[in-house]
Image (cartoon, rainbow, N blue to C red; front, top):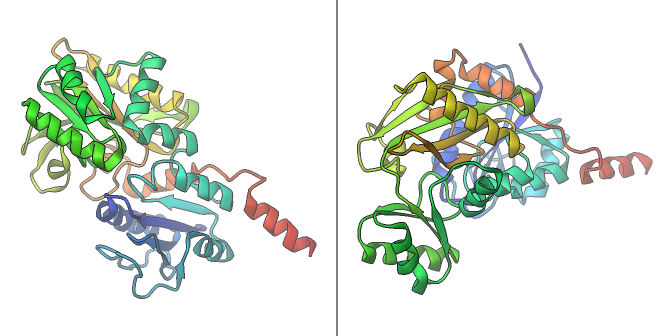
Length: 359
């Protein structure tokens, strides 16, 4: 079955650039199998947009492993709005987002696409902006009545020790808005906490200190929007290379055992699935999200974070959960594209088209 043309955005200038390109390769293949013609766009680490040649349904094309700037073979290259105009001229109205991290998941790209008149896969501007900021998301969780580990936001290195002592060692030190567990540390000594937190403050202006929960790690993908949102099977994560599911565990072979469906009681599975769906719906999410949990010593699940554009590489958790639910990657991407929200009728692109038609 031949479907409409879609755009595919991947790369970007976030720290997850390389992972995004891996997701892009998986998505490109799955979209082709689903009958879509794809216009890939690789965003270089310097912000350059590189539109590659159209890939026909079932066709094969290669994405680079890394793009620092210009990409060889690009049919159009330049600023975002220039390439977006070329995509619209080619008949593209839906953008599949394979981006991760800041500039891809923080609402800025979603706002740009909305203004440019595209529909896109994944969450909208507000949900993306809340979810990317770990501190604000945890405050949102508390305000909505969801359980999350105790935490402090710290902006001044001189306050790190007192706030860490309030939580008790070990302490989890995190950058507030990076994904893929970049700049996440579980630390047992106060000098280490001070060093890592101070470094993150220098880089980002603030750091998140969180009470460490020593227990079972679970994650729940949710797909759809509103009343149609449904959970995929719960995944249990057992790290092999450290105390938590860090970058190495996620992306190195043998880094973790990812058990799907999780080897937990049906009651706990139902509980975390319900929490994940409730959070997804209340946040106004669409597309697919993945909510991460730790289970404490009392058997109670605590929410860590939600991922609004979870990884879609061959090793990623969402494709594994979908497969366990009998959903192929081809079917998954089809559902995401068909569920992409239309752009608002008063976008700048619509005004431009109307003005052009009126002469």
